[in-house]
Length: 193
Image (tube, rainbow, N blue to C red; front, side):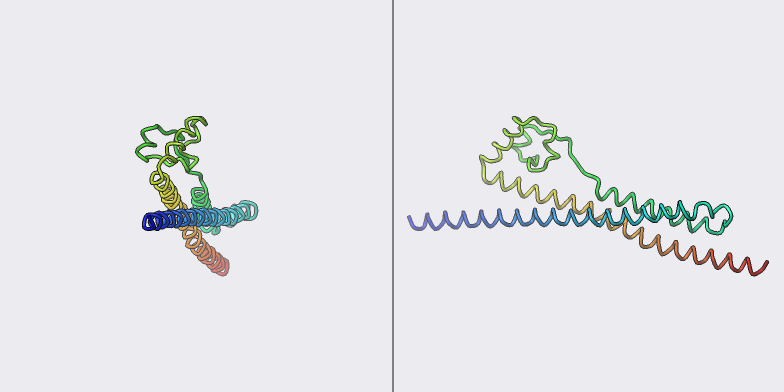
């Protein structure tokens, strides 16, 4: 009898450990997602400011100072591409929002993610949750799937964010070098006249 009680206590301890691990992993993923969104907003804001300055300050000067066209276009292209990747980083990814009973039974849908049930009515969703709650293993598998797909979403976000920052960094360097080369060219051309 004592062995059964010890075994049951050990199983419950393992279940609590798994639940704590999944909860911690989910919270960490959500924090990382928030960090990615914040970094994307920084990239978006910086590039928006640069584009605004270019359009308000340099646009009218391009007519008379042609040597500024190439570096300005390069800087604008850098900013626009960086903005696109910042937007892709923060763009929500939502599924079709429906599921079938078969998908629940086969554990092929994650009812813990709103994107998988947002088009369902409350009764169908509650039935799906009830089905998951009947089996502890099924529930743990659903929680594991939720953490896994949060990680997959994070990988996509950080990929776009990384590409956006690299484009911004290298494009900014190239633009500054192009501005410097253009100014040197203009200065030399002015000296020859």
